[in-house]
Amino acid sequence: LWDVWPIPRPALARHPDYFTRAKITRCAERVREGRRCVAAYLDGYLAHIAWVTERTGPLSAGELPATVDASDGAWVDITDCWTAPEFRGLGIYPAVLSSILAHPFTRDRDVWIYCDIHNCASDIGIARAGFNLRLTVRQRRILGLWRIPHVVWYGPGTTIQVNAAGAE
Image (cartoon, rainbow, N blue to C red; front, side, top):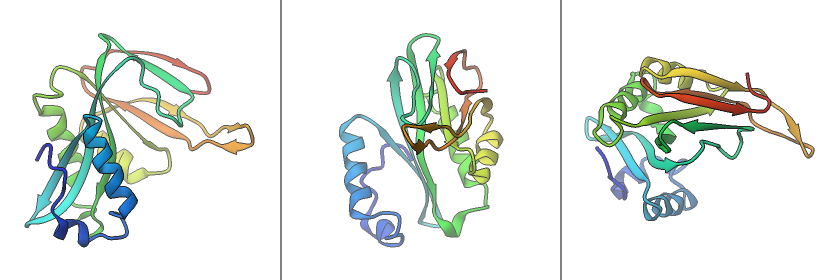
């Protein structure tokens, strides 16, 4: 289901460790920013959410020491995906990602997703959904702080140009 924020309170109440007051506030801000919430339900229970955003210009996650230019300037990114613990391992994550790729909102656009390099389950789900590995950003120390390494994936049909420092 697309554009489902706000999620009904009973669904939020089932996962208070994830849907904290700060998280709910941030989700409302995302809607005001024009981001779209995608949710999957299984047997009437919230199983997964993801955020989809239309963007222009280079892809540059705050943690990534790399930028990726979309070919026509307009692209979509998928971020902050979460699967309820009781539904993990059932293939819901790749199914949601596949449905996002097939949706009219994303069908003719470059689609990007990235995740923590140590999140193997996310990597597997992203690959199963049909994304292609593009870039691995290794951990680097900058100004005394360690940056979290990421893996960057792109959707089928995406054309790319990568300008990366510290990327492979």
